[in-house]
Image (tube, rainbow, N blue to C red):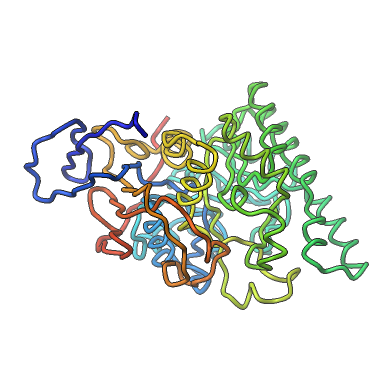
Length: 435
């Protein structure tokens, strides 16, 4: 902390104009941020706000407010769980219109890669998607089928031609299906049975296959929500061989272990599942060594009744869009001596760089004035009423953190201050810069 410079930031017309010590205070508004640390606004590169079609799960209005409360100013919405899914230009336009009408923060869109839509990817690219998302296993939604190997390979070739990355949910369909079928035939339905049906091996096999196909296609690959240290190591080995691959993990893999799934139940169910403490330690080590590029929430909420069914049938997704920075400050900075600059890279500058988002993710003159003001000394317990998302349930509720967002500024406008949403204008669509 002693190496952090103390400076003023001058903002004009939504952009950072000057950064330096003792700038003249001639602006119409002045924010006293003494004692606070200023981060670039978080860019959440992976979440599901489900709009249009499933806003009873979560919509952009509530979801973007939760993001802002956690210091976020921009998100990339996945092509599912909205319905219809964003797998062609028509559905891109529908989703874009819905988000523009409801979102407090700025937003970008992923397109989907599913069997039969490789010919649609060029139009999605022309609309401005940041990349294409593919599942290598069952997504849980029949309208978004998994990409078989040929679909993935041809999609990677087309994405390479378009200059965009393909993001993959990396779990082996065949292994998971066989283990799940055996589990059902034996009448096993416990939490531990579910965890054993989606082993780390399923993640490793899919990462290995995806990196092989990406190398052959000359494509950019983004592996989402890697849950294990071994998964990061395998992807990093491919990168060392020249594969253009980026690695994302999520705060819940850094915060919870499989013991918490036993304790919390379906609210902590996700895919890939939470891992044991040994795998979590290896994941932290990989992150600390610089092998992980991005931390994103993979916020995937559902109505409470879909999380209160029996564990096997319950929806698999973590509601955590508001807690990414809290986890990295508390467990990362305070618990593992993770530098603050590295936290800013994982959550802002690297997402902006990887996905070519100009003017975002940095504190520099000319950039958008997207800022998160943080009090590192403030401790808080997350209560249900603190959540700005649609449903006030999350596995993080009841947890204590040190390091609190006190103000979020999106393009020069304060949108979250002292626990309250104050922003009035809407966010706008953000597209990748041209190559």
